[in-house]
Image (cartoon, rainbow, N blue to C red; front, side, top):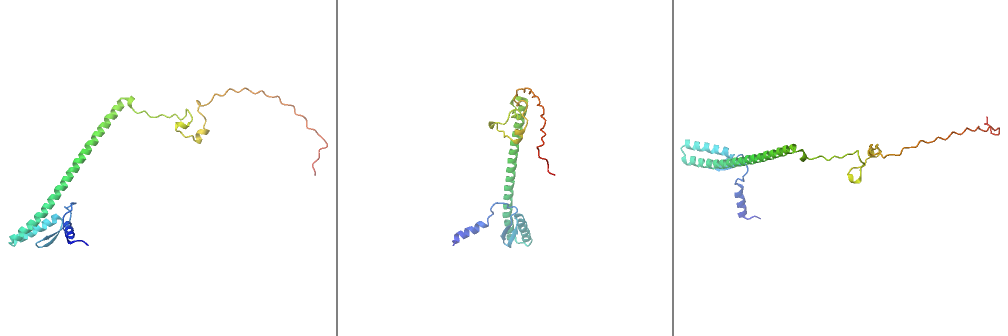
Length: 189
């Protein structure tokens, strides 16, 4: 159970503007003629209208009261607009600083690029890998693939084979006549 002190403190905090966008925020104003609800600009306009009406009816006290209420919301509105303007200016300043930093970095990058193009010795050289000159070794970082295994080795890789000697041909033996025996079984009919 809450004490009445904490409850009243919480109630007072609810009615205070909590920052944010006061310009578009809707307020409930309790004035002498009852509640007025709307954005600060709408409340200001309403209280100014009520003050004019009070002046026309020769009620100077009510007119002054309405003008004080309008002035309160006018101050709220002008303070909120000042804060918005200050934030906008701060953002613009930060954007200008960021753009100036980008411009400096771009100019430095262009100077480095121009210096690099002027001195070819300082240009980074690409790594050149000659895939055809030597087979993949375990420490080369290359992977042996089936295409590489069956591929014809490059001319530099071919091992010099000794020249072949021509073979001497053996003379063909004469064909011996097949024996014609009568003892051979004849085919059955």
